[in-house]
Length: 223
Image 1 (cartoon, rainbow, N blue to C red):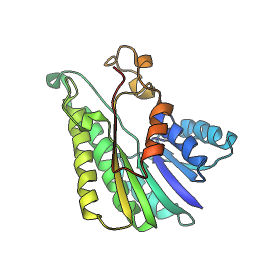
Image 2: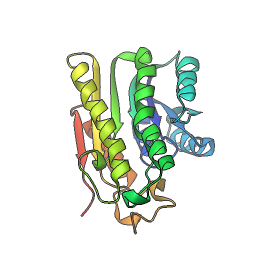
Image 3: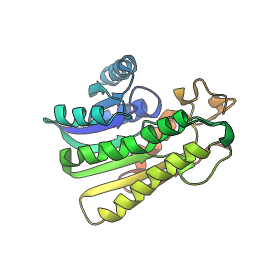
Image 4: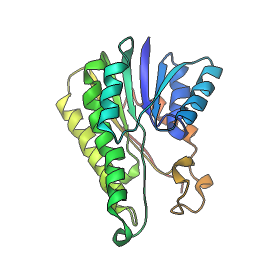
């Protein structure tokens, strides 16, 4: 059965992508740090008739990624790999710290790069990698310098793979979307009213409707 792997699959956009893709016949494999959230998301997918598996995984850990690629997926035909997990710390650059810098680059850039490398032998003959980058990968933003830098890194990786695998059966799609009303903004006052943003379901629908035809998807924030 064709399988879609989704990082950050326990909530928000990852969960909504899982629900939609399960209705297209994909077996959904959710990855994330919090097992309880993965279980809840998995139950929602099962309740609408989907097939789902999950595994706790910290994208910041090269060991976790190695163990996952080695111990899972041997019986699955992986056609979709969606790098959705992300973390952000916001504020003036001079007030940022090294822990925030390292966490964002390990989660937003190094994790997807390492997971892609580990998954290459597992991917089906015809497969797609979707990088969920955000519009922070398109332009600089005030009080987001380190977050934007990590997203530009993922953008550069994705665009380079597009060149490297051009003409092959591996497609790479970069998706850039504005802020969404998700748990991403928990414990942050960078966005005063997340409820005014697009819902993760709305963004997921756009990505699922467009990824097979486009190599770049841009979904701006609501004005």
